Amino acid sequence: MTKCTAPFTRMEELVSTDVTDASRPQCIALHAPCGKIEPEDSWSSENSENSLRSDRASVLSPGSEAGDGALEHAGNPFHKPSGAEVVRRLTKSNNETFVCLKVFCEKYREKKHFGVHHMHRHEKKIYKHVVEQAGVYVGTIDTSLGIAQKGIAICRDVKAILEDPKLELALMVDFMLVKAKEVLDDVASISGRFREIRVALYDEMQRIAPGLEPHQPERCSYAGEHEFDLRALKRMGDEDLLQLTIAVLDRFAVIVGNFIDWWSDLRTDVDSLTRSIEFIRKSPAIGSRVWMQWDDVEKQYKGYNSEIMAQQDYYHETLSDLVVPVSRVHRAVHRVAHGVAHRLGLE
Image (cartoon, rainbow, N blue to C red):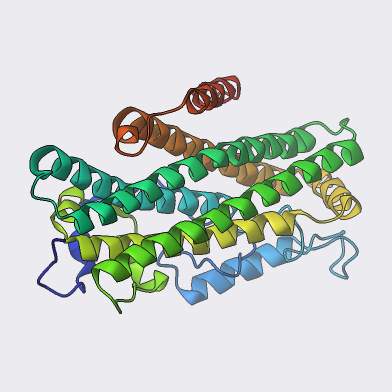
């Protein structure tokens, strides 16, 4: 296998510094902290504390001693930190993982096309195993389309409840919690598959470089709000590229954990949610802010959905022949996913 002569320490070389996501949403101060994902924005601790104090002064919980039935910021499931931020980072990390695997697939394709007679059997076997895991990854991510669609549906339910005081709360909330339970089950399944993919890729890395350990997820924050430089990735040796891929997948797994936590927080009892909604409805100012937050979450789910659809198209049209032909079942699922997305207004 091709190896990089320089030690894998300069992560910034993989990042194109002229590509930034300046339009991404900033953290909303009203959101309660998620507990695991720290904001990437350069907020000072003083500004953050001031914002939190300001929000707690205006948003306190029902039955508290603050008077006027104030709504406590912490513990109110409708003030999620960062539902939008969690989904945004999920989309970004998914893209990074896919890009790394895509580069491996394209390198394998080039070697098969131009140097099949010069590729060692051991090297070919490792490439094939990594490409197979790329196929498993894409298949796993395909299943998350349902998660995005349920997330969008719940966001729309919340907004509808806030907009129309005549809607029956108990029935709507109960339906939302059923969907939230389905999402949690789906995400837990995906998380398990990610662990299996990670183990398989780690085994391949050990075949290339025994004893080499992947970088820790926190060391992968080099990407920040930049995007991968594909040319730099393609210039990397196989050992370093695989090491990076595992590290990025590790970070993805951490974000999936944050995603699970967020949905777990939402899965409270119907009575608690009903009381929260009833209180929010009494304050137009609070209701407007909460509505905007959930609208932002919905937009991020749409972005995630678009990212997955693009990956499906690329894989099915470009890379699938490296592993196995796309089955009729896969094609049918792909058509159904497009149809559902169209009905939801995502295309």
